[in-house]
Image (cartoon, rainbow, N blue to C red; front, side, top):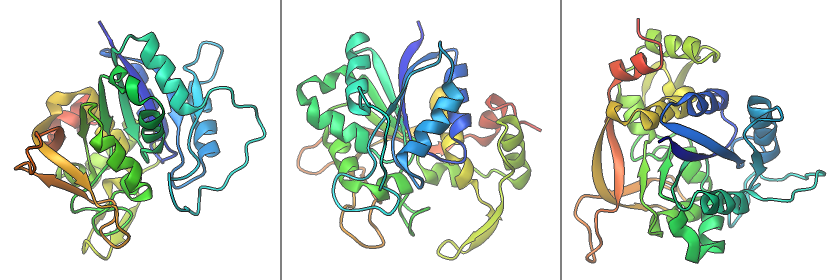
Length: 284
């Protein structure tokens, strides 16, 4: 039986590829998609998703949070003239209820929608079987030296998810960057996923110049989620840095749990690049 799947995502360059990978999976059945803000406004993410999933028989798309739980974010302001009957967090609850708790949630953006769901439906959070976050970072950041954008944008929402008792796992930037993809590999992935070719980039705080996999990170991580045999996993207790500063949004992973807490999170320690290239149809 195929696993029922919800996708919560912000607008990224590889959003269409993430959607296509989820829809094409033989092991998963995409039930609904919820939009969240990202580096672009949430309504842009919804429009992009509607284009990917349009048609009378398309997967439903729901509008979610326009900004973080607290504070301001410069891309968060928006006005939506269209009626909104079902918000993302309510759609997550309804889909999970209809599935009888046998549904997984894949998150590729700030975790604000998930945090609101957990807070609003606190007694029903067990309806989500597992949360997989395509994001997070310990040492390679795209929003700062150590921070991946999704956790950096709303670290308080991330902490709410981490403190819930829903099983969760992360496929972060670190294993994507450390997988050893060459420029030719990344170009092949882009062609296979019908994405623009990655551009040469340089980030001063990492002091290296290679075609940067970050624009493809969500798609590569989604492929690893859909094909878990391409990753090696390690169990940790996790926290996220919520204080302002260069470490905001950084994941803190503890191999030895303190205060009698269990090892409650799976972290993708490494990705197998040759296997991922094969499942993505990008092998040379």
